[in-house]
Length: 105
Image (cartoon, rainbow, N blue to C red; front, side, top):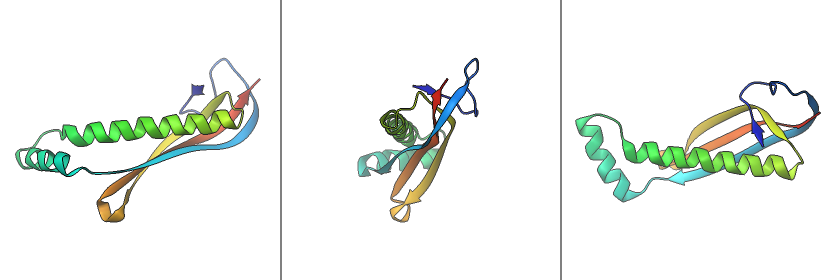
């Protein structure tokens, strides 16, 4: 699966637009991680626990988007974007990956 944040694939032409490909995940925080992260926020610096959580969430959303595009018969996803939203009053975060699923010529 070819992924592109631009609206084309260099060296290839788009034969057909298949539709919107999307994948999302909602992850909640973990009390153990929150305690350690809370200490890091007091002393400053990167909060590694949340960096790891969000990186894992982005990868899972991306995998789900690619599965969705493959199910539609796409060869690539162009215009790839990520969105994040707080959910459950800030106790969880949704990560959404989306783009235009296309068949290459």
